Length: 271
Length: 296
Image 1 (cartoon, rainbow over the protein chains, first blue to last red):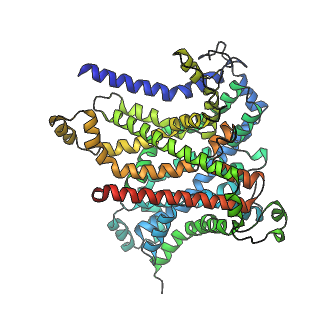
Image 2: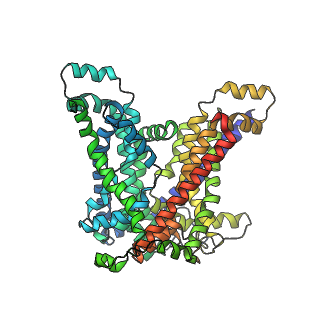
Image 3: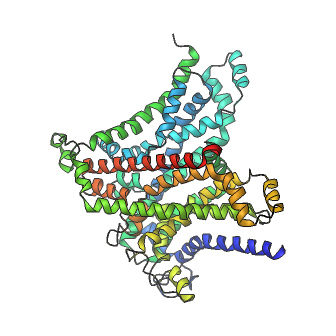
């Protein structure tokens, strides 16, 4: 029994190493001096640690600008997505209105349609109203999140009706009930959904690639993809760029992983 | 005659529903209409240049060798990738579910971490890991006596190479889902099977698999849809090459639409992609109904 337990744990640690190695290698190479990683066998640690690539990225390649774009868009997307989906998710769970259940069925059905299908007409629509190459254009898809609405609804179903009824008897308006009772109860799912949207927006590629045509509006992934076509040979520079792109979301995820994982399981296992 | 409460409810749902209608429903429906037109770069300049052409875009696509190549590549990505990714997720979940594993929460988060990383950044990273001359993977292969592989430079290995990266990136997601389901399987079931003399494999097929069958179906449907929509991986790692071996349907759509500005034709591609995903989902549901019938 004992050796099997050890074997199993060693096996898991080995998988862990394989999973983690690429990220550690990326970090290590980003500190190597130019050309150091382009040898065989590949070095695992820098001979001389340097921050020159990070400096180069921010001073010469405009990385600060891209980082700001990514950060601003992800933050705005999070705020807007919450503002649009949370009241709706709550209403679908707890308020009655004509056609509610049929409408909800339709939305669930629409979940199977990949949003990519509408990419081209959406681009033309935004072009006709002058939103191509603007933050607003990049943010638009985050307003129409059926998944977010669904996630909030699932969570809001657990709010006891008695609590809402009691507030109504006390003369509270629906708006007051939403702000004073519902929102505090929904806090955990708000963090989860906010995290999903922030990471989703930060990591998104196809839509920003299409809609943000001017280099000064690029987000980190779009800028990184463009940079990698120009600087294929500069492994160390590209790895520094990858670290800058990945680190913020990875840190945010690690800090809030409980919310992320709980929400993810609520959205898929029960749904 | 609407009550105050109902009016408030509409106030809550209206912004979201309007946004969904304008930015999701209308684009999806117009996509179908757009696919019946010859909308191109001239129409982009002046809408008067757009004509209704019926099914011509579809006919032309079906005789375009690159479109078929993209379809074939996408099918290969899915046929190889879905079992590979789900197999890896399931294996990791079963191992992590063992009671004797130490520090389970640490491993869970670690295995999941690649999933939240930025796709473009890790694709760039894996480009170097898969590098023919300086890559860590070829170094590992050659150091155990295996030949080095020209991963992204050879049309026969480019799809497997991208899949290694994709599996590394996404397996943690389904692993967490499997793990959550496995933890609902009572230990008594495994105990009873053990007493009946069932080995690890027999316990897996008789206890674990039936418990996760419904989840397996759900996960495989979502995975197929995901693999049908590969885009950033070939865009960053191979630009569709070598010899167009990694042009996926979505990549083809992107080039058709935003490189050549044939938006009518690109919409037809988008619509075919949707039909394919829909058809595969229906087939999977039908198969599972026939196989599982009673316990799903």
